[in-house]
Image (cartoon, rainbow, N blue to C red; front, side, top):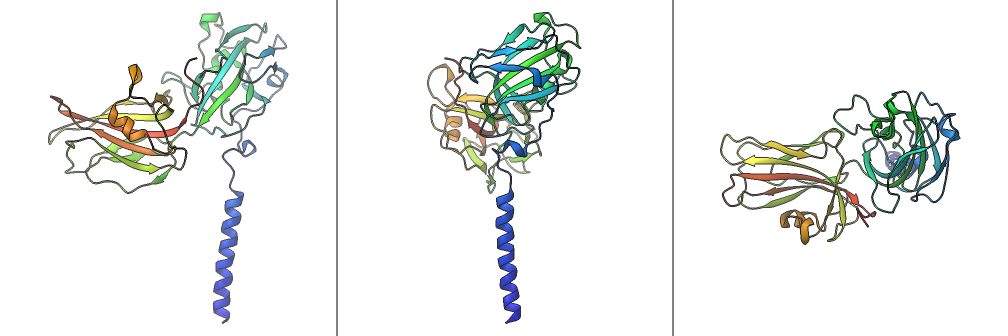
Length: 330
């Protein structure tokens, strides 16, 4: 009896501890559980911006302002998914001269999609270091307004067109965060299908494929789910935010797969695809069929078989990150 009671007690304890651990897990919407990559400082905390987030702000810069090191202050709190390193952030921004307080550049602030960066990552393959603008987006939330003070060099921006050629020149960037999307598919792994390439995924989400020995190029189009997400299902007309990589898969015994394109490349950002079969933006039918009805968080692989005189198939691996709510244009 004592052994049975001890076993029951142990099971109960595991159950209680498991529930407690689940309860302690940080919510992806909890900004207090995220540590910004840049700290607030004496320079960034002096910047003020008024007006509704999403509309062109009225910014006050106490010029001359000097910020030898990047600083980041939150002017307005947001809510929703918090951007960790590698996640995708859409935002509007206005840039000011720290020496004079005059505006240098700004995005449209008109309710359409602004700029898209991946938080904390390089924005081009030519960058030696991650720019402070991209770094400031770590811990960003939709609806948040951020003040960044930084040097022109550290910002990662080319400001020569507006007369800023001194690398040490201080600039001020006011950022209004529109939307945040995951960095990669986070769904549950599914059983692989016979006759399909195998998808391999790096820790940061970057995808590759291998073709098992004996697998031939299929004679008809095929799609398989690699990871099954739990988010909203894509529907026709949606603006789907996707990480996409593609490869050529030639026919023949000695043929080797070669990559054609990838949004995972350094400096790349996820694409927004309008899920339509009409007009200039029409999506190929096989890809549209693969995406419509797929939950956000999923990863799918689609093989488009050779057509006509072609001797190669095209392989797509797609991570479904979200559904964009800000239109591309008005």
